[in-house]
Image (cartoon, rainbow, N blue to C red):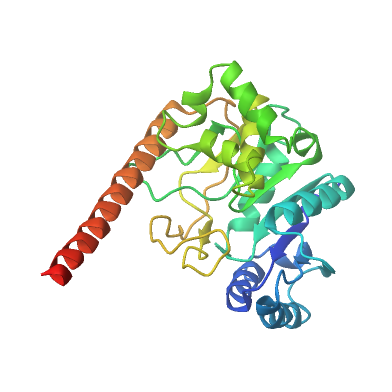
Amino acid sequence: MSDIAPIVIFAYNRPIHIQKTLDALAANPLAGESELFIYSDAPKNKEAIESVQAVRSLIKNVQGFKSVTIIERENNFGLANSIINGVTSIVNNFGKLIVLEDDLVTSPFFLTYINDGLKIYENDERVASIHSYIYPVKKELPDYFFLRGADCLGWATWKRAWDIFNPDSQFLLNEIKKRNLERLFNFNDSYNYTGMLKAQFEGKVSSWAVRWYASAFLADKYTLYPGTSFVNHIGFDGSGTNCEDTGNYDVKFLNVYKPIPLMDVCDSIKARRIVTEYFYSIQKMNFLKRTFRRMKKYIKRKLFKE
């Protein structure tokens, strides 16, 4: 197995976003040693045809990598199915992989961090994945730490870990409830992940990420996180199919790379507390925003009536 993991990018209909993703990734020193696979999903309606074609035209000219392989879907898979299918195919062939979506801008140290993590913890069965994003929390986190489960913004894994992925959201939710793990799974009820699982099996959402998180969580596996992100999500601008316009998740990169130490694989109590506090702060902020919008509507109705 090569020391440098293949990179897989999942793209749809945002040419401006994926250009930024590719430019930032190509600026990584390890890009020239990395095999790149780009999955281009087919348009789901007539309105998406032009933008999908623009993406496909753009990715045909990608340079700066060891090799570039483009997989153009003939039918629309949707993001969740495209990722599940693509990750399974590549990881079964290479034994490990790095996963990005078309709206993630990486630090110049992204590939170094991810490949280092994959190498250090390759044979540790307790580790499910290496993750490159952490929320813009207010308190200082450890340089690196573990949390139970898995995550979805700029991540990497091995075949041995992806093999535990279970797409059955109803089974996952039932197991979490049966084991009385709801509160821990939901970060002390600060984020409604169980609600996402319920919405998944009811067909209200299509999320591969919550099922990946639940699969690793139930298997008592852990993910390595950085204290400062190596990737920024630029998709929270209202342009994505699953993202609303918000600035809650914007982060800044470090201008230095701190090597990953060999650590005990266990849930970081400090990091879990800080992330939980962050989720609660977002809840409060969203509540205030909703209240303000309702007040504005109420005042407008009153003025109009008068």
